[in-house]
Length: 157
Image 1 (tube, rainbow, N blue to C red):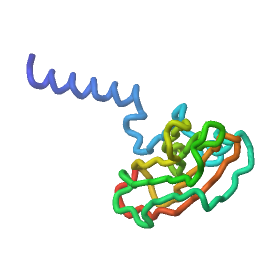
Image 2 (tube, helix red, strand yellow):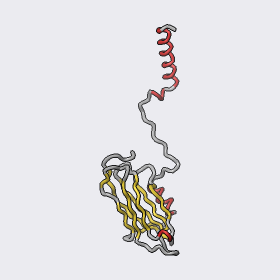
Image 3 (tube, helix red, strand yellow):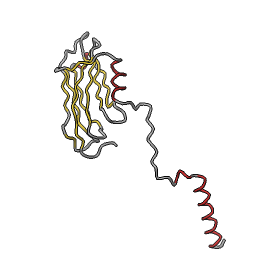
């Protein structure tokens, strides 16, 4: 095979590839499809509470930094000053965010055997937003606390 024949074949195959797949040349970025678990904050809150009333409470303490230098590892601590008795206990702690693609950061189910309504973790935030602790008690009531976190760099967006 001569060099000229090789180059002609290469150019011809390139032209065929370009004409059959014009999307390869498009500089336009396609929007990211939402996954099966992705839901916004309002949808997540409604899914958890079933539309029940949510009360602000002093017995619920949410600890997050005011400024997070790295959005990939934001520390979150939730403490609930509530009894952990057999018929009166913290049933669940939910950690939510208001602007990520999936608002549900963590869902923790508790029993009276846990001894304390407490949970600590690190979550990923795509930018400055509110972090919300939503607590379900065994009697079916919900408590809520929210704090804003300013993310300076390195979010998940």
